Image (tube, rainbow over all chains, first blue to last red; front, side, top):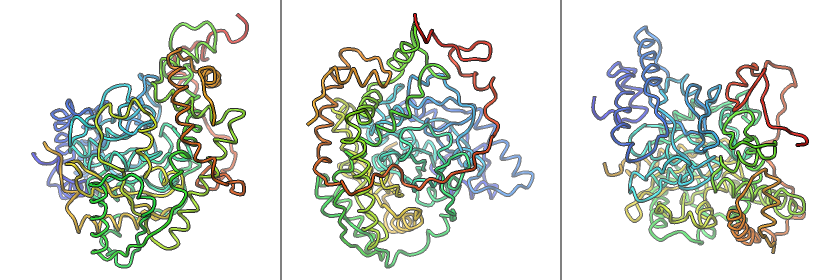
Length: 486
Length: 95
């Protein structure tokens, strides 16, 4: 059946539940789409057609036997290769995990599968989620579906490109400093980073444990809501997953947004947003205002320090987390070392790419004797200031709006030679991770013919407000209906 | 302003158990110095009275009860080198 790859998750579920189409037909349509489009795009590192079709047929049989169709019945999903799916490899975009097969499935993926979703495969990413372009993948580039000469963003570039190019209606990614929201913006899709603690990190390969959070990509706010309703909630296997009750996020989307207050940090935005991106942002604010929201100016005085704070905290945590790749228990073992120190050094030299090594060096430096107080501890104190800024802002507004990125997607190779320039692209996304807040990126039109995003940040555990604003925005505008050239 | 040279990077690389080439040491020294110079902006803030934030959530502890872990044969499945139910590594002490 043609056109199935254009359908939203909600529509697929409705048609599967109405027995208009089988889960197997939906899965086949997406696998065929991947086979024809992905060789030039590079969104997937691996696809799992047999596993997906077996899963789809099992769902069809259950439905034929009278089972109630679950919330994501027959909906295909792409999984960033940072989350474990038993039976499939997890590489994390790294040579050090080239042949690694996990022993279990991540909680977020298991919950999606329990809700009837069908895993199509694993998507490309910057190595260990370190990057803003997916250029740091050890395996392949992923192209931006809007312009093959440009990056899709990162680190979840494969998941964002897959949803934008209609290879899957929904995908999972992870967001440590913007790795869901930034590629979502650059590929023209919806991306949501839930509140820290909303989604279990069990089975998510750790990068920076106080910042990492799993979340969805989708083409509509409704689909993003369906995914978070399925994956959120307490998990005994993750001590940092919160016991906060999880609403049915899709139920509140029709409510109007009259009287909701949106804070705009004008002073913070004055630094370095390109003109066309800023124009799309202003139009988005006007559309929200026309739909009933109230705009207010807010001050977030510590935010200019967020990128420096982030790159000290995140690399320090990463240097500790990545100590586990030692060539002993799993993953690559390189060379023929004569002693244990040689085994560690050779394995890690051969297995890690340059960006990962750079961040391990920076993080180890920030934690080392003589520098700990001046760098790591100081960054943790500034992190408190950033959180306080948001607490004060949210006393007077329900959401804070910024562009997701300062400009649309850049070209391959444009920023790889200068890591600092790459890091500075994260200025609007890292504050939410430092403060533990939810953040939603919505397509808000084109700048220079390329998609850009509107970012809405909310109070902890108030994703509902962001999704309600996002749904109202998508009812009022058509930016999310724009598709990349075929 | 913190000076970073190749010997600083060599020291940090040893702490991180990374073998780097001379070329990588030079490159990372230059880049690390640039990144730290830009992070100097944090040094101007007065944070003496501000507590550090390690994590967004207050810790919640579970009961420290024994549980079944990964069975030994499964834990060894992905090992690059295993023998007699153990991970095998090169000589650790002496030479």
